[in-house]
Amino acid sequence: MIVTEIKRVDYVSCTPEKPFQLAWLNSLGGTDTWVFSKHQEYKLDVKDMDTFEPIINYLQLVNGRQRVLKKDAYMNVKLGYEQLTEQQVIGIKELLISPLVIFVDGSNETVVVVKEGSFELYDKGESKFDLEFEIILPKLFTSSL
Amino acid sequence: MSFLITRKPEKVFGTSVKISRWTGIGNPYIFEYTREDYHINNILIRPAYNTTKPTIWTTADPITLPLFIYPGDEIYIKAGLYDGVFTVFSITGNYVTLDTVHLGNSGSGRLNLSQRITNYKAFINIYHGVTNDLIDTVYPKPDSTGLLLNDVSGVIRSTVDTQAIINQTAINKANKGISGSFKIGYGATYTVVLPSTTIPVTIPETPTSPVGNDEKYYWVSAAKQITGEMPLDIDGVGQNLKEYVPKNLTGSDAKFLTMFEKPTYFEGFPFFLSFLYDEDFSTVYLDRHQQDVDINGTNVGAETDTTLNVSERGYVNQMKIRTPNAGTQSFDVWLETGATITGGYVEVGGVPIGATSKYAE
Image (cartoon, rainbow over all chains, first blue to last red; front, side, top):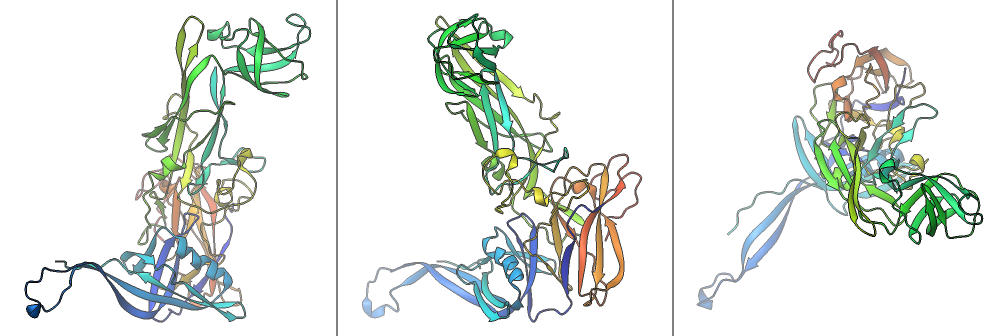
């Protein structure tokens, strides 16, 4: 006796260029996945967390008046996919509100964050959409003073 | 005197006796309780007590007979036309005459002692559904009408361990961090204030033991707003996941837990479908069925079925999909009831008694 819906699943045998798979918990408590394309390679975002000015005895000998105490560094990746249907976009948009997004790389799993405000959707006509967004990889360890 | 659970967050499947008790804890998970100091059988004019004023016939708790009610007391009544606070005119045994005009005959309801009972405090114990360990106790108070709405989602959220399972080897795997079950036990304490003395009272916990309590409620770390019929009159949407709960019932067509109308399986990458593995499948196995089709919708290869691991029941499950055959454009997946479970089941990695190992893909 059948006890569930009969779910039709598309099977894509051609791997997207520069594939990057994300899996995320959706708002129903299930796990959804999608294989995106890397639109831009890893980009490094660095922020100065704190600075200070050392005491200066002789201005003539000073080679700089500001020192950085600590930096925050993150790697970003821009992902995208083209020619999506509206239903596929609805499914993928769950990424934005998911409490857990994971980058799946073979047997490795890395928790990532979708960068706020980075989600861009382009209407290509004929009910097809392209999308792009950035994800933030785990914070890099940086040395500090 | 009693403290009753009067509405539960559950939905019934049609005319069957099967119930969905799965709720997303991103939404309120509400139980309604009612304080009923005395049960009202009816309210009529009873000439033996008064010819013009209505008289209540209560079902008095034998322990508290005579009633803890005195002429002049204010009592809360909820029974048909009588809804509010009334003054007691006289009392004889378990018949209470009200100092009011007759509003009409009324049926059953409840009577609460507004004046004579103080410090009314309910206690609700929330137990783990599998280990029966106490998760927490909350002490809410009923409102002035004796109603108490208690949202347990906050307590349950404290047990969530959000995690994803990506590299699973078994055909199905429970995600115990984002789903689970619990049981509740409830009672109340209060003080009865009489003219000459005060009496502390405890309504003992119901059910008395979580171990023997089969009424489990299931939770999922989900926040989907689900519209549709209300669960037994409890207000709000998004509470019960009935449409996602498979049941061992003809016509059951539970949805998988995916936000994609048509998910996509990319060749060479992990892919899953998630579903709620309900306790209703305690006597039969669930089988994953799969049929591949080509671009014209013609079957590619034969339909396959594989038995799921029954020990993962009671949680959100992730189900692996068989690698489709060459030439497949899409495929259909569904769950069917399989063989009858005989002799119970064993834990993950074991082989059910009387069955062959079909866990491997």
